[in-house]
Image (cartoon, rainbow, N blue to C red):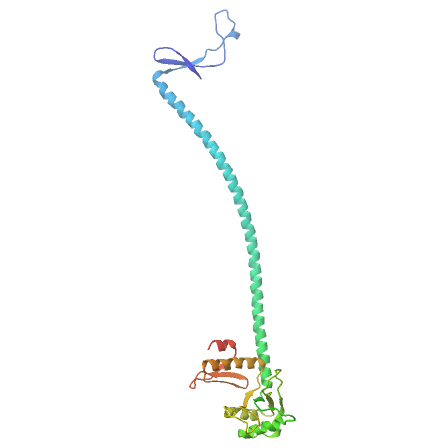
Length: 287
C-alpha cells in the first residue's frame, strides 16, 4: 500500500494500490500500451487515528510474536537439553535397576551362605558338645586329688587308700584301676595332682561324696608336708574352663556354692535356692 495518498474531497485521503500496468490513452493508442489504473481506497480523516493505532498494535503483535518465537526457540533448546538429561537419567536408572537386581542376587546368595554357615556352626557346636559329653563319660570313674606332696618311688594307690581311710571310706587295692600324677605343663612348687580311675562308679561316688570333710583341714598329720587336700572330678578341658569361670563368679559375688556332679556344673546363689545347672558361658552371663 502506498501510504502517500492524494487529497480528494475535503475530509478524505486517497491511497493508491498498484496493480498490473495496463495503459489506457486516446483512441489512437494501441491496446498493448494500455495500463490498468491504480486502485485507490479513500479513508476519512476521522478514521486515520484508528488505523494508526491498529498499525501500531499490529507492529506490537509482530514484535511480540518474534519475541515469542525466540522464547519458544530457547524453550525448545531447553526442552531438548531436558530430554537429553531425562534420557541420561533413565539410562542411569536402568543401570541402577540392573545393579540392584545383581545386588539382590548377591544379598540372597550371602543370606543363603550365612544360613548355611549358621547351620554349620550349630551342627559343629552340637558335634563338639556331643564329643565333650562322650569324653566326660569316659572320665566318669575318675577323680583328681590335689595337695598330697610328691615323693620319690611313691605308691600313689596306697596314698589314695590312706585318704579314704581318713575320710571313713573303705577303698581296696582292687578298687583302683589306674593311678598316676597328672602332667600340668607348669613349673610350680605345688605337688602335681593325682588322678585315680576306680573300677566301679560306686567307689568314686562314695569318695567324692565326702570331699566336703576336707574343707579347711590341714592334712599334714596324714601326709607329711601336706596342707589343704581337696578332691575334684576329672573334667574335660571345656568343662574345666566353664567351672573355673563359675567358681570365679561365686567368689566375687559371694554365691552360696558351686560344684560338679558327673561333669555337670551347678551353682546356688543362696542356701534356700534350688541348684541351677550351667551349660555354657551364655547361661553364666544370664545369671
